[in-house]
Image (tube, rainbow, N blue to C red; front, side, top):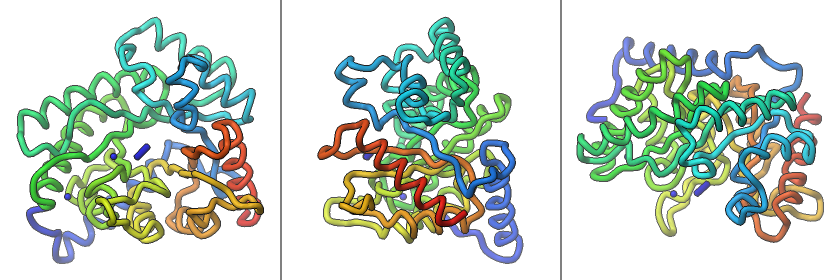
Length: 306
């Protein structure tokens, strides 16, 4: 879905800390061994947002659609589709049971609308951190490895970065007892500047804080687009999930905005071999057609690189 350290690490100790953080981030991917294929494929719930918002699809049936209609056995939820159910034990048990019965793995919950973790006001940041705790608890109950949050905020870019890093560390401390991670998507504003968000990761310097690089969310401001390949390259050392954004396809089945073969070389060269989530946002194809087109493209790229 589409929405900046008071000082830099320096010297040998600082460089060592950054290298160590990157190593931990890679090793923490979903706590799973490298799969036989270069990467796995999952489905992000936002791909079906029109059906969900219209009531055509119920959130509880998302895993069923992923598995039975698209042959995908791993899903990424979006909190807005069950916003009032974060602490509804019966609902979450049912959601998990439905996925488990289908052999579908719940990977993460994408969280929006819970406040700005990079807000200039400390009280607002604290409130945002606390607002996310219920989603950590829900993610734990569903068997996820992470929640995805945003680094939204205000003020000068450097102060914004410092505030976001502070909140991410605080939230990660709450995630640790649950054995969960807190991951940030490039999602508009300064967070769509790959260097800025990578700087936030280095500043947070916590093994449970990472990124979810999205192939398409690189609009920093109106008329200011960050290079997507550069951005993903900068974010991959901290990645614990990846989002394959798609909008449209040419006659050969290639995504018209992103060179998927080039992008997936960047992803796997960083040592990432976990799930890559399909996130179709186009309008020319239907949601199901767009999901199928994205899956077909990812499978083709995967077979060519295996």
